[in-house]
Image (cartoon, rainbow over all chains, first blue to last red; front, side, top):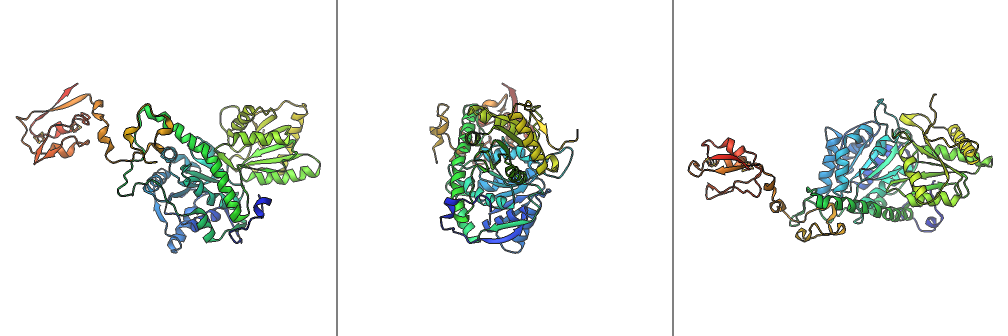
Length: 410
Length: 99
Ligand code: SF4
Ligand code: SF4
């Protein structure tokens, strides 16, 4: 099991382990059944469709009391989610790709109105060309909407992250919506072993939803989302940004509490074989598994390679990332984006990671690779090629290319 | 934190505003003089008005109060000057004037 921590293991775990096998979508639906949220407005879109479908089955079987709102679009799904959450109901939804794009305006409203909606995002490319497979262009496109974003490598992490989303979102220091992201098909549909938690333990961990202020609260009127003149708008945005900064420590506290229940440790990112890594691959999502397998083989050949798998993309752990790169003495860093920014110089991780390094005065060589767009395979051979190139860059044999595509026919 | 929003002014620091600018009161729009936006103003001619009350319910801003079965003076603090009342009045008792 990944992320098993020594400190955490010494503590009595508060949930029995239930071994099973399921897909990422099933794992999220299973967590939803355990949490039994109040409201779920959703509209089906591949590859996230199974989540509302499975939740509907739980509801039809009387296993949960969730009010499912069938809507006619994702724009309405997020609008209904905002209304329900403001009314005082714990509210969730799920979507992918164009569905997230259609929620655009409302994503910003959920965040600025400080509503802790939880959205399961099953990452899929954005059109065009129209394609149903995985990349991160949907989540990355929503990176400045004010949502907390947490990415999973596999079904286990999707399940664990989903359960942690509620205490993070609903914490009075935060009050922000959370997107729990997993890779479309690769994670959402592949069936893998998983370690589940007991229903009661999950319910205790997530707790009752008791918002301080909500619309259906007789005698305590509140107006949500009022018009703000210029005298107040800028201050409101800064207040929201402060909440995102505070979310960092709440995410870590929640991870610690989760570890005590499950024995599985989480942070802003996972450092895999990073202690003395000269060549590091920084990436998010399922491709981290491929990178780890490749790094294991490289280590056998005496090549000091490591993986830094980013879990929390918003808030962006800039200082911590830079410190991890400094600590290991990295000679060259590959920043892997599963998304094209169309800015002519790389992807979003490329921009944000190099900014983080520069501000922390960590001047290691970096190469920004674009990989896996619209479901393109990413293999251990690709990783070997990247590390070869990083070694040549570090040895001064070649100039670092910027913005290089992996697996592109040229 | 429940805050009396009357204590919040344009000199309040950003940390003193409410979360998401929530307002902890009802009917606060009354305090917002949106009538300032008006560029055209309805004027009532009492001579022509028959108190048929067709105008009051159609005002989108509830700016024609009714008391004792009679329409009262316009609420100019909130009237936007849309002219719907003037268009509805069967007796030509409301004239729209340019400000
Ligand atoms: S002009 Fe429009 S807003 Fe003003 S009183 Fe008439 S209907 Fe109402
Ligand atoms: S519609 Fe005209 S006549 Fe009727 S109450 Fe209004 S102003 Fe008077």
